[in-house]
Figure 1: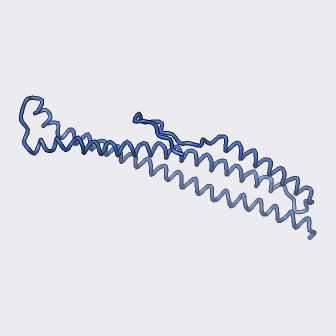
Figure 2 (figure 1 turned 45 degrees about the vertical axis):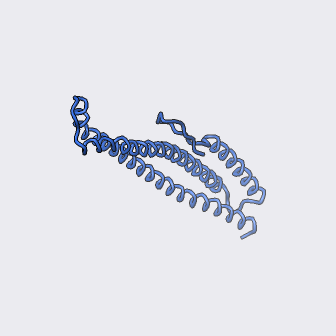
Length: 182
C-alpha cells in the first residue's frame, strides 16, 4: 500500500472512530440527564407533599384558632402549639421555596446541557460524514482539502452552538425575588 493510501485510511478511520465513539458517549450523557430531570420532578412532587403537610398542620390547629376567634380560652398546650406553629411553618415554607428555586434553575441547566449535547452530537456527525467521503487512496492535497472543510464546518457549528446557549440561568417562576446563577 502506498503512503497516500495509508494516510487516507488512517485519517478516515480516525474521523469515523471519533464520531462513533463520541456519539455513543453523548447518547449516554443525554440518558443520564433525562433521568436526572425525572428525579428532580420527583423531588418537586415531594415538595408539593410537604406543602400539603403544612396545610394539614394549619388545618389541624384550626379548631383552636376558631376557639380564639369565638372569644374562648385555649388550653396551655394549644397556646404553646399555636405559638410554635408560625416559626415551624415559616421554616418549612422557606425551605420549600428555596428548593423550588433550585429546581427551576436546575431545569434550565438541564435544558441548556441537552442543547449542548445535541449540538456536540451534530458536531461529531459532521466529522463522521466528512470522514466517509475520504477514500483510502486520497492524495495529500485531497486530505488537506477535506480537513480544511471539516475544520470550517466545525467552526461554524461551534459558533452557532455557543450563540444558541445562554450564559446564565435565571429564576423564572417565583415571585420571591430574582436569582441569577453563573
